[in-house]
Amino acid sequence: MNIACVGEMVIDFLPGEEEGVYIRKAGGAPANVAVAVARNSLSAGFCGCLGNDDFGRFLVKTLEDNNVAVLRPRLLDEAITTMAFVTLDQNKDRSFTFVRKPGADQFLSREDIDHGKVAQGDIVHAGSCSLSKPPASDATVYAMECAKKNGKLVSFDINYRNLMWEDDRAACCKAVQDILPLVDFLKLSEEEGDMLGTEPSKAGETYGIALVVESLGAKGACCYWKGKRLTVAGRKADCVDTTGAGDAFWGGFLSCLLRAKVKTTDDITEPLLQKALEYGNVAGWLCVQKKGAMESLPTIEEIEAILEV
Image 1 (cartoon, helix red, strand yellow):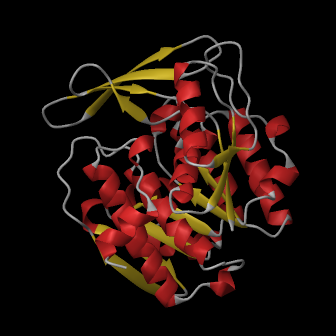
Image 2: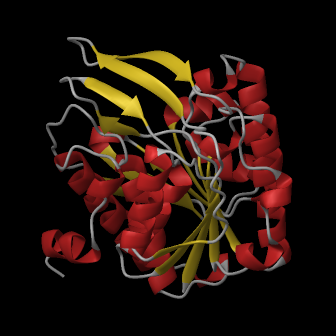
């Protein structure tokens, strides 16, 4: 079984040289999910734009080290990483200061999407970072349309960052809403449900989505499926930076569905969903314990050791 992740090249953090300071690196939630799935011993591919700079090369190496095929490598002559210096105050609130490099607005475009490469995935995943610019949004919706035409399951992770649309809430909401009719598996939080004007428990019915997973933060997660609400309790984790935890959760969750060879939403059962929630919950918790970021996404062996499988 395979997963194809569609994305561009913003989001996520690596620790800077000073305590509490982080620097934004190339990648994005789709790449993180691809790595998380690969570390769960399943085939994964990443289809996106990669910057030809230190961060872009770091991403390529991370993907290669985790057996993730880069389905659409696009190394550019200029560094195209969007960098953000992030400071944490005493309340652990992030403060962003953006520094754009030359070419920073070059994102995934419709022309980058290859039907055959998208079709390599049994599940095709995108994150909302893939919608952060109009061309990227158009390309991501197009990729999801290709996936649906090929009979693939579509996964989408809303990670609401208004600032990525330059604080244009209406544009942000529209970019997300354009993709939701194509989605089979949706992950969101209560805040992101508010953005869409619906509660997570009603998002499935509102947008015709078979399975909705709601992140409850430290309290765990729950999912809504066929009128049922399944839950998994949170695990205590004392850590400043939790970047990547949501991607780790979703990678662990999707891995369970892939391992069960789910081809349609009708293949899903309640026991399988409960197991997927547990795997995802442990994966996210382990990522937090390791202080986040792509290189801290857990392996299947680490997850199963905690669950004593």
